[in-house]
Image 1: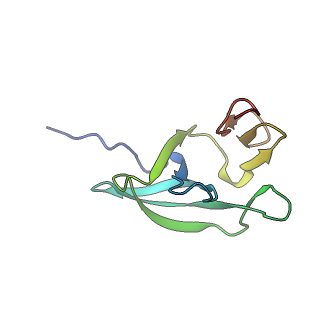
Image 2 (image 1 turned 120 degrees about the vertical axis):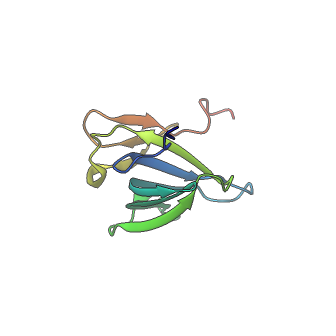
Image 3 (image 1 turned 90 degrees about the vertical axis):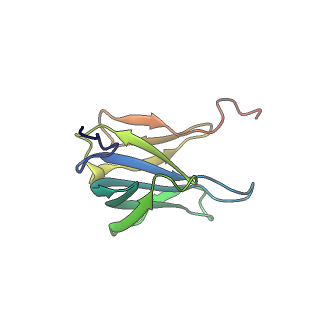
Length: 118
């Protein structure tokens, strides 16, 4: 009996670290899966951090390689389109919404609230 891996090498992912406390900043990572073994996957890509002065979310310029666990309970992992060019991915902050985009055809709404009143 063969098993199917949830994440295959080459898959593009958005990893969101769950906020554990109200004042925690969002921590985001976009990368390509290189390998997966027993629920732990190796991925190389880009970390995004909040610019506290400007209020925007910026991508760190240098790629990182991370080992992450699907079973940790602190990660939310989204599978992104296979053709997505990770070097072009950025996060755009608008007045009421936050978008992950490649500047072309792909965009994903990352907003936590759909209305300002929340």
